[in-house]
Amino acid sequence: MISRYSRKELTEIWSEENKYKIWLDVEIAAAQAMEKLKIIPKGVASVVKRRGKINVKRIHQIEVKVKHDIIAFLTSITEKAGIKARYLHQGMTSSDVLDTSFNIQLVQSGKILIKNIEKLLSVIKKKALKHKMTPCIGRSHGIHAEPITFGLKLATYYQEFKRNKKRLENAIDEVSTCAISGAVGTFANIDPRVEVFVSKKLKLKPEPISTQIIPRDRHAYYFSVLGIIAGSIERFATEIRHLQRSEVYELQEFFSKGQKGSSAMPHKKNPILSENLTGLARLVRSSVIPALENIALWHERDISHSSVERNIGPDANITLDFALFRLTNLVDNMIIYPKNMMKNLNITKGVIFSQEIMLELTKVGLSREKAYKKIQTHAINSFNKNINLIELIKKDKSITSLIPEKKIDKIFTFSKHLKNVNYIFRRVFK
Image (tube, rainbow, N blue to C red; front, side, top):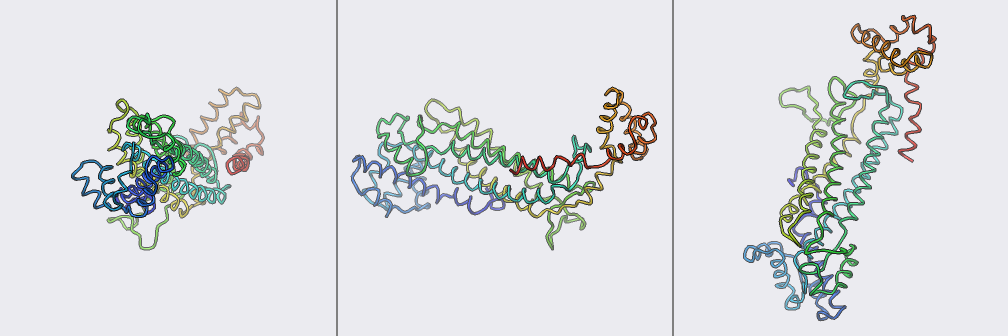
């Protein structure tokens, strides 16, 4: 992933140095198990741990010749650690190291993503509580529907990211497996107890049954969850973009001193952060289909998944980390305009109360069909003639003869729409 959309912590997890370090951790853990089982001489693991330094440049030099990354890695370690390193990798296959290490990188990344979601939840909650009773218009199909509050709007995102946190925790558990089972997963040349030891040492679980690889449905689940989280980010970002439009202007991304919005138009303050998040979400979701297609491999293994994972592993995790961090800062610093929210609430001349007046007519004897048609006619005239709906209602004697004027006035207020906000908040933020 390019540095523009990368943060240090995730970048380091997917660095060559960290990858080879994890490979070495796996090999040392396996050697420790083999020593305990008297499969290899004592002292191998300690010598390799002390002297087996990672030299990325040297590993790459060897790989150019041997065309095999694990062999190049083992050769490089042997050059540093000496003759005892020949006992490394006994009975193991490359995928034992590659798959176990890849899972560790996913777990490391996932735990940071969890922390990011927790920070985002904290920021959303703070804003939602502050604007719990800030009235704004609810929209369906982009059209004014009925009043809600801005706090309720934010609460929906809070609940969604709570679900995302749970999904990601499950996905991390799904990929927290280890396979040290040999060439086709039969333990023909390695004791199954080695796998148990390595799993415990590296805080993983033994893969119940592997082929030459850990089954890729686990990874497909992990990347699918990343894609869902990216979808939630885009949903939030899209809302911010819409609410920042000049015709709406209910909120605005923070615009720092000296910032410029357009090279041509000095007045512009563009929603660049939320637009950027929309694009980054597309990148993360693009990893989902390849991850799903990686499930179907030939027989006990082929390597068609390998090139895919070398790309989507770092790219999807690094991008999502950056996107969550950016969204958290965006929400924390966004400027909210309650006066404009109120202005927009009133812009449609009270037609947003049409449902309640229609329902009241059904309570006093009209059929729903007649009540609907009567109120719809007045709502259309309200739009066309730019007259408040309440004025047209009060002039209609067929309505005022059934509903007292005081009742009509009460209907055309926000109180009914806000009466259950506290109830909803208790459910969300319990």
